Length: 68
Image (cartoon, rainbow, N blue to C red; front, side):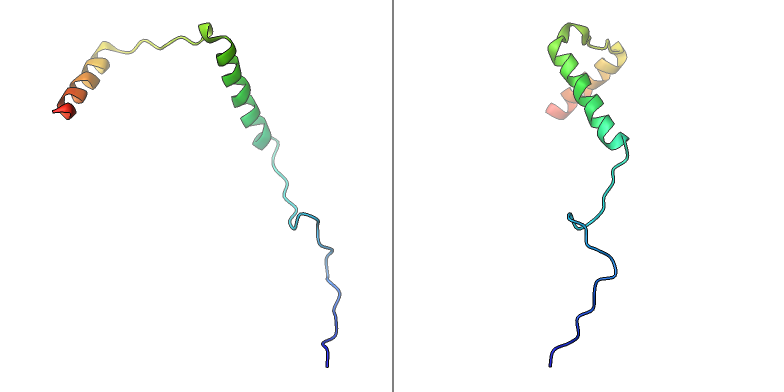
């Protein structure tokens, strides 16, 4: 004896779930990609930050102590 078939209460979607992303979920990676692409195309605009001499001396001292 077979069981009776019941129709589904909601029609199934093609992807299995209805997922909607907010606008910034696409905008932020696009902006990051454009910023990195701009730096690659014109590296003269990317300037290195000048560090505090005390900080660089501290880091050098830490490197020396860990090298022992």
